[in-house]
Length: 328
Ligand code: ADP
Ligand code: MG
Image (cartoon, rainbow, N blue to C red; front, side, top):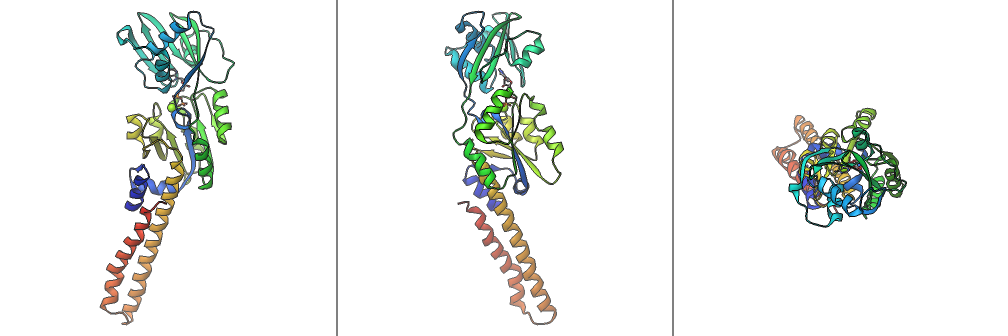
């Protein structure tokens, strides 16, 4: 197990304990978060629709209201705004996980988020007919239009899914708080079998965990921006180390240091190889000891054979374990 963890860390995969390698070897389902995990989490503004005010002003309200959030959407809106943000203009910031944010900008209440947020605030909104993530805006209690943003898939996401299937993972699932339209499009492009959308962070894996057989393990892969609880709830939580939050790295059992999701297939392979070596060693050690024990009982084995059965076997088992360091 030490060698397996060492081999994995050389690949840039941090495994927090040998028990996780064991669980990983039994993993049958891999569940992915969308934003920041399958996608880059770097949104570009692709349109502003139904706006009641100038585009630039709406964007300014959005960027200011989002100024305290670390969500990829808010970071992207701040970047699209492009100017320095004067935080002193913003007060009463409240982030509602899986919904959006509300704040006061220059004393005027501003809300930026998805349809759920607008429903929550009782503000009628206009649906968007384009495919993309929609940030609805409400300014001073009235609907002020929406900002359409789009995210790019990670270049290696498709390959990651294919290699997981090759590694023998039965089922891949994608979960997201984003709209069904976006979710379905991403899942189709990547070849993910199952997709659930418009979820709140807290509900993300609950259903999946309850419906699976006890012995089949489930891994959840997320960036942890608001799904750190899910990371700790899954049998194995895998977090993005580079762009993920500190909370995610803390809550996860496995951390991918460079966010390369192809490494999930590598760690599954490493865990199976490690477990294979563990089993070989156990069988080998017990078998040699049993043989020498029987020979000893009949007076055939001498002292040196007994020494070999003890120390020799340990050394050979350790040498065999070193193979787990090599991950090719
Ligand atoms: P995912 O499941 O794809 O990682 P999240 O659960 O983080 O997405 O968010 C779900 C949805 O909630 C987003 O698609 C967005 O519509 C809305 N949302 C969450 N946080 C914010 C925010 N800071 N600003 C605007 N919208 C947000
Ligand atoms: Mg997320």
